[in-house]
Amino acid sequence: MKKVEIIDYRSLEWQKIMDFLMKQMPKSVYLMGDMLSGSGKFSMFVAVEDSDISGIILYYWGIPGSGITWILGDHQTVERFIESLDDGTFVILTPVELEKKLQERFRDARSYPEHIMLCTGKDEYKTEIDFRILGPEYIDQWGFLQTERKSISREENDQFLRTLTNQTCFGIFVDKIMVSGAVIETSTPEMAVIGSVKTLSVYRNKGYATSLMASIVGYCHNKGQVLYLFVRKDNLAAITAYRKVGFSIVDEILISYIGLNI
Image (tube, rainbow, N blue to C red):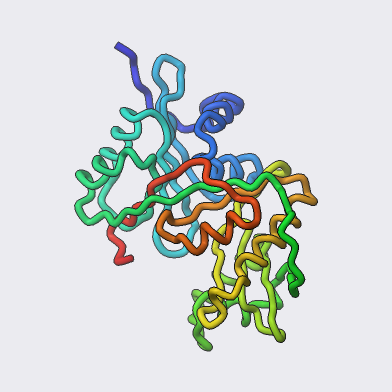
């Protein structure tokens, strides 16, 4: 019988961790980006069976609001990690085939699958738009884009300011109004993951999100990066827009909210 040990990832050879995460791609793309770029605050534990890695569990910390947990690996190991989780309030990402196990462990789990989409850098979709890379000076418009409220809390303002300061953010403008925006949430010289795509409600269904994504694809293509994103499987309008600029579905993952009224 194989002996299973749960150890801190820093106890293992770095390349061994990277090799395991590469086998889990593209589900592990966020983890790869954060680890290779040195960004992100997390702790990660690894299941090792007779010197072979069978799974990982990663906890992001220092994130406002609920925590985020990733569990990847073989079916049996992921089940064990799910069983080991304490009750609480957090978001968990797992392979979709573990939904039943997750529901058994957390009766209040609210889960939905997301497509993982990949664009290798094609920028054939051309658009003429006021496209900008954003900085902290855009805090007011960024806050309104994210909340569609004229007044935001101090905590929200601080979070938005951190995003604009520490991450690469994009926006497109119509008559000086930021109508759509997105964030590169993690990246390496070879790849980037785009997220937090948002368009003001009164400007939706007018092609602005497609134009935004086309501009971001061109930006990343010029840097030699392939581009990933995660999108809900039932968000057909967004999937259609992403396909127009060269994205295709390559995998899926389950996102579950535990103890959260989402």
